[in-house]
Length: 194
Image (tube, rainbow, N blue to C red; front, side, top):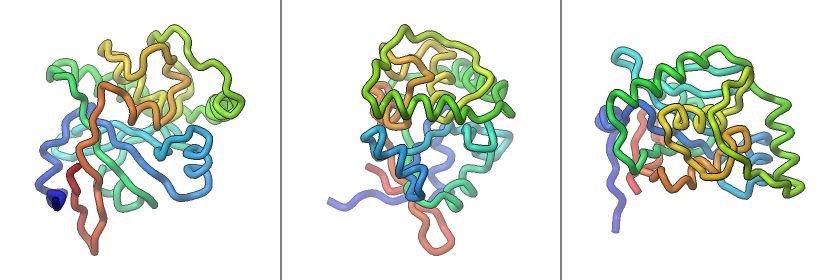
């Protein structure tokens, strides 16, 4: 059976505020994250509409940023996938997610927390703690996405604090489902549906 393929221009209007964008990076640091966590994912971001532009908000080394999703896909060295929430999220809650995500813009990247998290995973330390929304001064990608969902009462992984969420934990959340994978061919982007 052949997968359905659509052009980015056709798909982008189906992507909603709060949908999750997952990355499988191929450089050293993303490969290290994938090895440590045992998941194929190395990064996570959140889709938001900004006027008529589809953007991705993410916590990267330079902090919490926003950029056009199409440019983000072109520039990423690796696979980029689109996930939707299985539960219906009201437009009001989606707007609350965007507002929460915007309030985090400009915060620093949590380099030390990322390293601490990696060591806990490497040495198989307990990561299950009471999960509650905590405002942090510094964030890393999957923590940022988990907090955005927690801001509307959706816990992507039960008994796991947001600060101990890996990109793989986000992708394997029972609340999310993969819709497809973006492919860059020539000078265009296509979505291969799953």
